[in-house]
Each structure stands twice: as C-alpha cells, then as structure tokens.
Length: 91
Image (cartoon, rainbow, N blue to C red; front, side, top):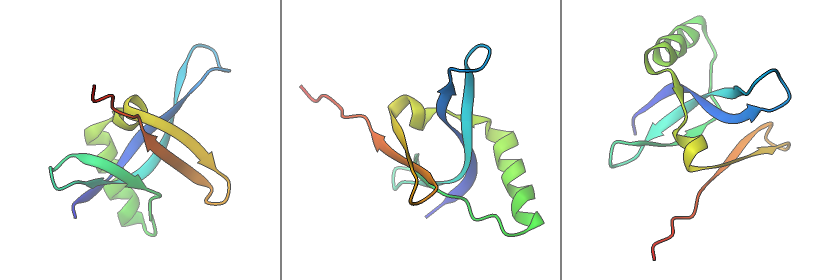
C-alpha cells in the first residue's frame, strides 16, 4: 500500500478574523484505484521523517478532499480525528 504525508483540512475556524482552515498532518493511504482515500495519525519519529513530511506537504499543499467529501469528528479517546464519508445518493 502506497502512502505519503499530507496536510488535510479538518475544519474552518469560525471564531478568528475571517475563516481560516484548521489542518492536521497525517499519513494518507492510496486505494487500489490509486486515489488517496484514507488517512491515519502520523508517525514522525526522526528529523528525516519531518523532512519527508515537509517535502510531501510542500509539494502537494493542503488536501481538502476529505473535508469536501465527509465529516470530521474529534475523538477524545484517540486524541485524533475520525472521519465519515458523505453518503452518496444513488437514486
């Protein structure tokens, strides 16, 4: 399974001046159709990992696909986000 580091939009800060994106660094995973459709909490344990994350994120920018196609819920027990894909109306 292919993966890379990414910065995904998880919310919009409605309390600041204007509407700023709230983002999270994650590891994004590629599906069999070669689309990045899942993510997990990142495992950054070295300067090399940070450099790779910086390179991936700098190259790709902020990923809004998850925000545009689902809903994020903060899970206290995991200290991380859960994500549910929007239901697709097939009618």
